[in-house]
Length: 111
Length: 111
Image 1 (cartoon, each protein chain N blue to C red):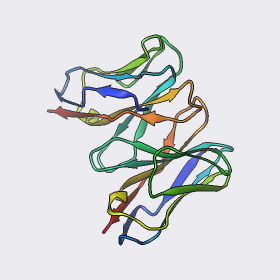
Image 2: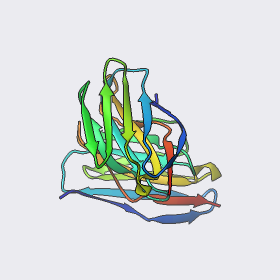
Image 3: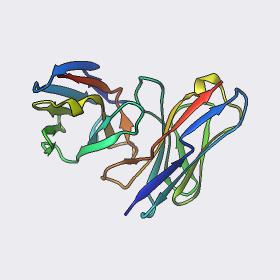
Image 4: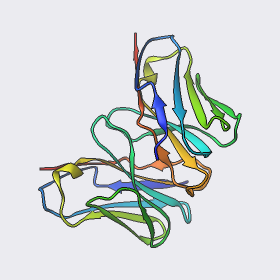
């Protein structure tokens, strides 16, 4: 069966520090991969979308970047965090026309 | 572009019905519905792939009007467990496979 792992679950980082969130998927091949961010009480904002290794679509200009070094690995990074980067980050995967599966999320607080 | 959800919030008494609408300005390939409890990842409810399609999950059902580029989610005889935020996600025909979410509808079911 397919599973998605996302870590860490919570993270507190100072302003200006780097960020690396990792997401891996098991049990499927060539999935679409997503990073979403959710501010407190708000909707799911699509940040990055990937259809294959090295293929990243950035949806919103921002302080973040994403990489897909392997088929089932998706990494969200920042060189210098801003206060506005705080939020609930969700990794997700799907295949075309199917249900989208979410990881458990990372709650990032930038202080 | 995001789909537009309405209403933004709804309060129900247990046993009452509600309708949540999701509309798009662009042609849709599919519509996904999710429910999110506070602090948790969204949970998949259903996906509608064809115009005119209707589906159900417990006493929650949805319809997809491809011509009008909209979908509706029906909460029937609501239960306390239906409380949460409901998101519609859309895949636009002209935008590849990426899933974009509306702003969400907060549902509170009271005893």
